[in-house]
Image 1 (cartoon, rainbow, N blue to C red):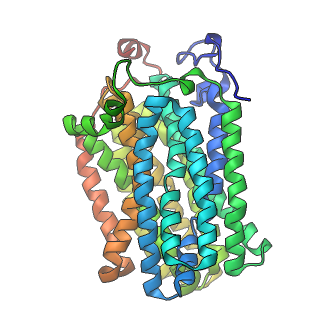
Image 2 (image 1 turned 180 degrees about the vertical axis):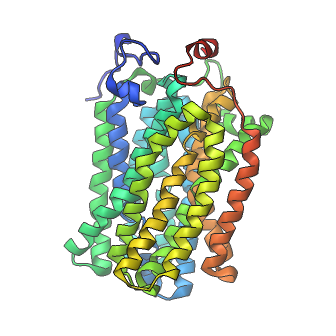
Amino acid sequence: MTPTPTTTGEAVPEAGASQETFLDRIGIPHVLRWGFLGVLVFMTGNGVETNFVSPHMANVFGGGDEMINLAATAITLYSACALLGSYLAGALSDLWGPRKVMLLGVTVWVVFQAAFIGALASGSVVLIFAAYTFRGFGFPLFAFSFLVWINAVVPKQRNGTAVGWFYVMFTGGMPTIGSLVAIGLIPAFGGGLFGQRWAMVASTAIVVAGFLIAWLGVREEHGYRRLAPAGESSLRVIASGVILSWQNKRVLLGFLTRLINTAPQFGMFIILPTVIAETLGWGESRWLLMTSVIFAGNILFNAAFGALGDRIGWTTTVRWFGIVGSAIGLLLWWYVPHWVPAGSDWGFVVAVIAGTVFGVLLAGFVPLGAIMPALAPDHKGAAMAMYTTAAGGATFLGSLVVAVVRPWGGDVGVVWAFVALYGLAFLMTFALKVDQPRVGKKDIAAAEA
């Protein structure tokens, strides 16, 4: 049975109001609390395969370095659908309400996950490409429509913090807890390709559980209704993000900055599994453990950087912590494992610490989720459509850079290509200044209301 929406008395209170609960005060709207947990569980299931799907497909294709490039191409196509699905998550949430879009996302995920697993068993390259490509629509439709829901109800003074908590859950699931689950599931199912395949089967149950937590637990009324202005045609609503980006160049630059944000993360998930596990001799389990630790650091700081942005400025936080910090951290994650003795225990610890610098500072991009709607206060839905597009599109850009650069520049060339993209993002942030209410500045907040 579908739960009914909340009553007016259960609406999200204003920042600082006496009705605020503990969760409201730390940036998680109390009425959406089960949705945050649902995103964590859903993305855990989605993240189980993240750090072994590239070598797994390469092995199914026949093995070898060339097959890794072919797997990167498959992931690029998957990521292109994730990009489109991320745009649709924002646009369709405006049109239908976030709940229906979340249902669509989980349906697409489950159907094409089953097709993908069947295609892997058949060994058909065409079927593997087709099934995995279309599964790319699933997770952004679910997760980013909930992010739209958050932005529809959270007080603006806590916007950066709320977005930070969303990414705590998003990254907490993929790749952090997802990788830990994979460490347990793969050997439990016998290890090797067989164990990986059944770990993918088990991940489906986790995804469905995450959906049910959110679907049954959240009844806030914005999720049930159209968020776009009355009178706008469906076509206009769906195209609103593209139109806004054409008319408002700052929104376009914000889109490009978010697109670059996590692209290196997804690119490294393609090139590093083989490097860490085989070339440097630490094995698959330690590679999965490395990613879990690195992005656990990211989880711990997502909400912190959101709160920092609410206090010192969203753009300042993104520029210096997110962009400059992530570029330095990315270089450390690549070079330090090559500088320490391959396969050594202490070298692995040092390599993990270096990678964790990247994971922590990547959280510095969190305030972009508050910057984007502030760039177009009269068209927040369209701005968030572009933000969610960029968030999902980062997987596309990351895999595209690998597919284009790796054949001629190798893995090192891929890393430096990402550093160059961070340089471009640094320059673009100077166009992202916004009027921002600060926590505790009630006079400014009232003027913004």
